[in-house]
Image 1 (cartoon, each protein chain N blue to C red):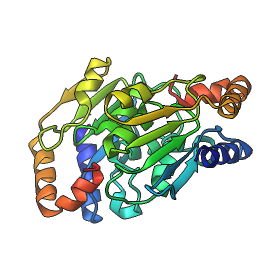
Image 2: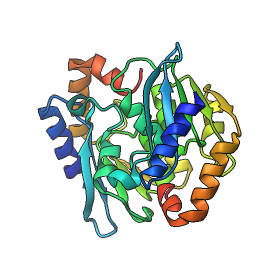
Image 3: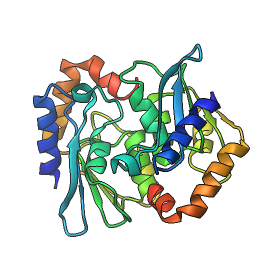
Image 4: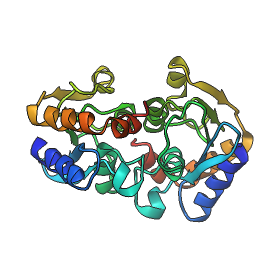
Length: 141
Length: 141
């Protein structure tokens, strides 16, 4: 599942964007939607990786048996998305370069797994070193 | 400021959509972006009123002196948006028909004003009565 999110992150990087990717999976492991951060590509600050994957999945009822897989710990905006729509499970590639609201999600009943994946860490470390201004813009700092 | 958000909510209703509107204002009261819920219109579950207004404002640095005005208490998703991007102030038309995360925002240093505006209450009461399935879909219930 993480491989799909990493593919999305790399696609975003190749487009000159912020390398964060995500995918929403259904109960049988099928991809419902996938996407990556689109701040640069669309000039759209509202399209984080998780929101892009959620949007791509279209209108659904009942997210309890879905899993959001993301290369990076979800920020408060994306954590709020998970909580509001009752997404049952979140898999986080890494939370080393940025820690958002994943502990808050755990406290609110979401099953959260943090993988500490070295590929995900390297993607973000390299990006933050190369484009710090873009990274801090994306998290509102 | 609320009048702009109400105009947006009414525009959404006229399009067959969910009547929630929002606008993001700058420090001098200028409109930076405005929008309304677009679940029905675009088949896009990620476009709540607040995220639509945020998107319409484009890429910005520093939201501390901006004000998000919304006809309805922001859900967790939209509350997370406000917290992540450090939007300094939120004006809520009403929190009677739905209560999202506005108390959580207050606890996290956001200046929140709840107006309990009868026009906003009526818009949502009428809508929830007319289209309950659409309303519950929009809040993931």
